[in-house]
Length: 150
Image (cartoon, rainbow, N blue to C red; front, side, top):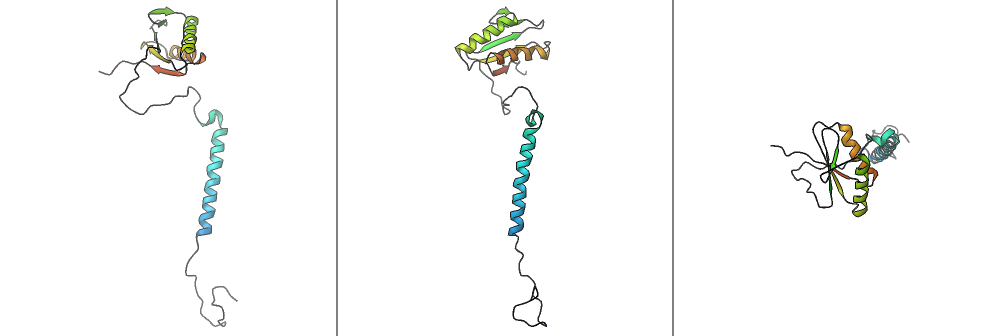
């Protein structure tokens, strides 16, 4: 029996074409390939240096909005002056004293937010240094104080 012929027809019968093409197996193959590519690409990204993202502070970026953080009584506001001195509660502190203040605040309330207020002339490295001090004592909630736009 030849393909495309109606069973029971003689050799001289008419060729009958397929009425429909079954695409179900083709769709199944594409779905399986899609799943394979998704799984392998996620594995490749996870194995890449840095886990597929830039290394550094993990920051939960806020959506654009106009609301500001309101400081609570338990939060710490650290000012960094243009000459690099650290001021906490009106007192000038050394780096070690600041670290102890962070540790004391963490013991009292682990959810303390550290608000860093740096002068415009302060190098970025000094701001990062204060943030790393806070993180090393267990205070991971950090905020940067800014001036209101006029």
